Image (cartoon, rainbow, N blue to C red; front, side, top):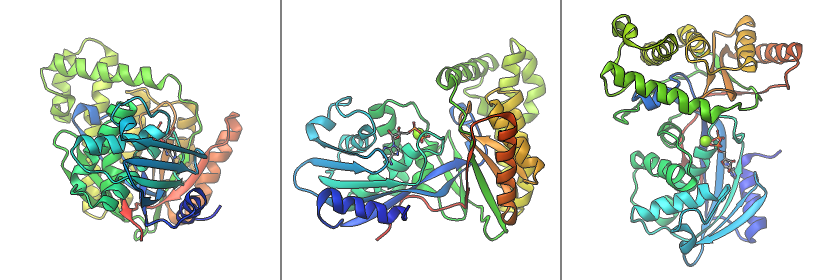
Length: 385
Ligand code: ADP
Ligand code: MG
């Protein structure tokens, strides 16, 4: 397959018989650490992947948007009247129409445009192809229209597209990562204040790499399980008399846990509270340039998700165990759980061996073969040319 940038350009030419005015790209993301902390007002630490969604685009007359995507192999068109009534554009087109809608809602004069999209981000694997699509389209439209919308205000707008137009109740992490990440850095995001800080995370310079294993596990009851975890955290915060579990520290745990009604709730709270601390500890190590030493924190995060938060599945646990046994410095599930991807921090030279060990462990258990790709922390949304 040719390069994603070339595919977007070729798609644009064949869909519209003209040259694009420019190309824009936005990355998929993985959360390095900090799982189920976002809705507890806590901390997350995503980084952008070298897997990207590219939009080739040119203005067109009138309030009309025509969109072709290689990924879904389809072309859609909508006008302002469709956009202004959420629900009229459905399916994958809603992610694009949602961005136009959110921009218009915020008072921006969005230029009509022809768009062609190609992507290397796998859909529905938990690497946030949805935010990559929103961010790539948003950056293209802001640029084409010369709109006054600084990068720090863009994540909210893209999130609004996904929450209010597509109807998916996501937090601010995915869009923040797709838009604001920097190459060689992770994005330390405080989900209460929405403040971000760029934390050095230059794997390449350290001779390291991140192996991303797509577990290919079917997402079993993920929506219902997510809702029940969230409810349990909110109820626990209320019992403890704090606005959110973010307000409980590791030092408070011994006093806090006995106040909770049952063992399950105690374990849910322990996960969130210790996970916030692991994010802070990871940030401290990265700031000090001690990248290799974050491995045990990643692995501890996994154990906490498996034993206390109970959101892992056998495929995921198998991948983590096999990666660690093959020499990974640390490994954990990333994303909401019940499937999705595993991150394994590896010496760059060991990536192939570790990936093979995971594949072998899967075969021995009779699981559908996993996917894998090695990534480095990449930049957020940007204009290419
Ligand atoms: P994730 O964000 O984890 O990949 P989601 O379910 O949130 O999974 O988003 C996936 C959806 O986003 C797809 O089903 C599709 O509707 C849309 N999407 C993402 N990338 C593209 C693309 N390149 N072309 C068309 N639709 C896309
Ligand atoms: Mg998504």
